[in-house]
Structure formats: structure tokens, C-alpha cells
Image (cartoon, rainbow, N blue to C red):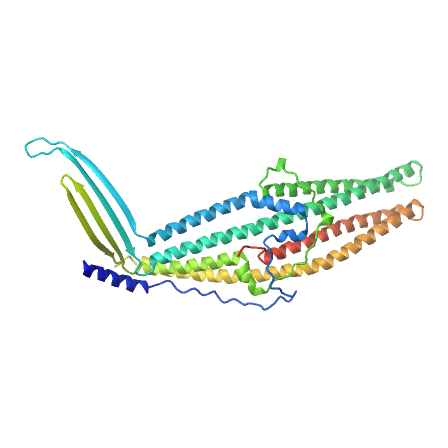
Length: 448
């Protein structure tokens, strides 16, 4: 027994230093020192970055989405499943203990038969010696996939809050556009009423009257289309918030009171640890390395030690057994080595995917920074154009009422005002959209 124990200790000591899992190294990817479009900052984006827009309505919608969004709820359960798998993978590192209790009743006939009850109890302890790190690699792979599942949830959370913000701003901007369209419709109807009176008095032609009728009808159609767009965004917010669309009422969004924050990009290297999609890709890479260790370990023998003790009555006896069993692969038709090759190729594939994801992340931040800068320039120009168009319409209307200009000039100026005001509202929405895109490209406020 002492010799067996000494041999067992020796085997455990040798096995402790045997690990066939390759050491992980983060793949080399080009790392720009800064963004050419803007100065970089080391500041971390807040986890509640949407509060920077200064909208209590948006804050309420985001909180509702985080609490009741069904995609996020499903993501939580995916994490629970991955955690259960990781716990199961870790169970192999511990001995397996089983107990058995049996009882039997016998009845016999004849001189040699014996009646009676036989009872037996047995306790078994089995332990697999992790000689080549298979058990440890299995546990490591499961833990990394649990991390990947958690990063998946963070990425989904980022997408969800960004979608809520985008739908909120789109709804608010569409409401503003509909208000402008309704005001233009009121003006157009007033002009039409004037032309109807002038036509009845023979001062304008039927062509001028009909042109204004057409203009009024066109604006009416635009108002209806904008109302439909509002309903679509409202229903989208309902789904994102986990509410039934028919019962959902959007809060007062106060588009004009919303603040446009200045979003500063972090240094490019920070994306590797900030963006949840990149962290997920890295976790999958680590899991793939562990899979290689599992496949390699399958090429070598496995050893299991079992201890059994049985207690029996009638007749009374106690039996103790200590045994060891070894399983060495000899011939599997190349299947085991093929699995090693497959695992290595899978790791190489994930390396390429990780590098591609990093390059895509750089591109997305660059695109968002460009959009932030250009949308600011465009939005300011559109605001100036809208202000000039309003002044031009006011002057043209006053001169038309005074008989100084004909109707065609007023109609052209009216169309220009409608287009300019609508474009200005869309330009302001573009600036908010660019801010959301930059928050999202930077990884938002993803939890570390």
C-alpha cells in the first residue's frame, strides 16, 4: 500500500507540470497612435452615456428598455446556460463519489436452500488524474466561453440602448418636421383662400389657383407620411421597452431642449479592452487554444484511480478495493490527430477574424468621427439656409399681399422654405445620430 501511494504521488507530481495547451498571445494588429480626425482622450465613456443628451424622456425610455427588453432578458439566460456549462466542466477536477444500497429477499426449497434477506452498501470514489491537462483545458475552454457569452450580452446591451436613443431622436425629429409641415400647410391654405377670393373676383387665373391647390395637397400628403413615420418609431420604442405597441405612449420628447454632447474619442488602443465585440472575439480565441490542449491530450493515455468499499450483511463481510485503470489510444484511424489539426485551423480562423474585427472597429470610429465633424458643418449650413428661407417667404408674402410680386414668385419661395426647414430638422437629427454612432463605436459604457 505504501509503494502504491508513493507511486501515486509521483504520478501526480509529474502530471502537474504537463500542459499541452498553447500559451495565449494577443494577435498582432496595427495600432494607430491617434485619430487623424480628432484629438484622443483617455477618459472612459460613462456606462449611462445617454444621460449626456439631457433628456429625462430618453432616460426613462432607456431604463425601461434595460429592465424589460426581451432580447436582453434572453441574453441573461444565455449567460446562465454558459455558467452552468462552465460549472459542469469544472466538476471533472473533483473526485466522483457514489453510494449504492441494495436489498434482496430470497426464498428457497430443498435441503440446501436458504431463506433470508441480503443487504449491501457500497461507497465508490473515482478520480481521473489530469496527466496531460485535458480536464484543466476543458474547464478553461468553458470559462472562456462563459466570458464570451457575457461580452455578447454587453454588446447586445450597447446595441439596445443605442437603438433606443436613435429611435427616440428619430421620433422627436419627425415630430418636429410634422409640426413644421403643419405650419407650412396652414400658410399654404391661407394663401389658397386668398387666391380663391381673387379668382372669384377675376384677379388671378385658374392656373394660379390650381397650382396652390396642388401645393396644399402635396403638403397634406407630407404631413400624413410624417405621422405614419412617427407611429413606426413609436412602435419600435414599444418593442425595445418591452411594452405592447397598442398600449405604449411615448413621453414628451422636447426635441428643441435636447443637448448635443461633444463626444471625444479614446485612443485607438483602448478599443481592444473597451469594445465588447473585440473582448468576445479574444475570449473565443482563448477558448480555441484550450480546445487544442484538449485535442492534444486525447493522444496520450488517461489514468483513473478508483476506491470502493462494500459492506454486506448475511453473511457479514467488508470488502475494500483500490484500483487504477489506464486507457491509451493506439489506433483510431487518424481521428485524434485530425481533431488536433481541426482545432489548430479553428484557432487560426479566429485569429484572422479578431484582426478583421479590430480593423473594422478602427474604421467605425473613423467613420463616426468624420460624421460628427461633417454633420456639424452641414447642420449649421442648413440652419442658416432655413433662417434665410423663412425671411424670404415673409418678404415675398408681404410683397404678394401688396401686389408687388406675382404668385409664381411666392410659390417658389414657399417651396424653398418648406424644403429648407425640413432639411434643417434632418440635419440636426444627423448630428445626434453621429453622436450615437461614436458612442457605440467606442464601446459605449460597456462594463469592464
